[in-house]
Length: 204
Image 1 (cartoon, helix red, strand yellow):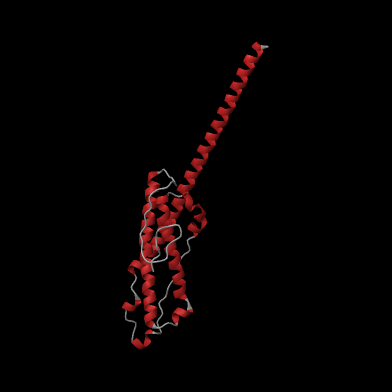
Image 2 (image 1 turned 90 degrees about the vertical axis):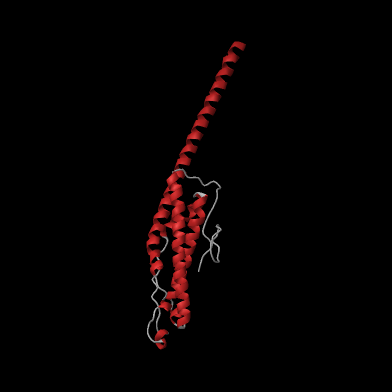
């Protein structure tokens, strides 16, 4: 009896060890696969965001060359009230809207500059719609000039934030190893209207 019990116990122990080792190896494999998928997703999201910001940057360069219309003579003062500058509608941020749920998985050093940039773009688009409205056309010339000057300043600052966001994305993409663990954050700051989840501001 004892001779039979000994080998049975050893076999049971070995079987248990094999099962545990097999479970651990499968778990480790699943973890590695999940980590690889996460890294790929982080890289893809950053690449897509950079492409959209780069596209926006071409448009924002127009603000660097823009002239405030209160610095240009548009005829006799008596006709100034009849002049309203043309403001184009801003292009939507389709990539950001599609991946916004994935923003928390990005490296912490890119979250602030990316979020602050898109917050500024959102404010710029909203202001552009205000300048396109009928109410703006009825304002007195000096008020129109002041609002248009603010619009140009917002566009120029959006360009600065675009450069900061692309620099942050370039840095993490160049490393080739992505982590969403805690880390230092940096972002340009200005006026009022803090962006949610960031230390940055929206500049009028």
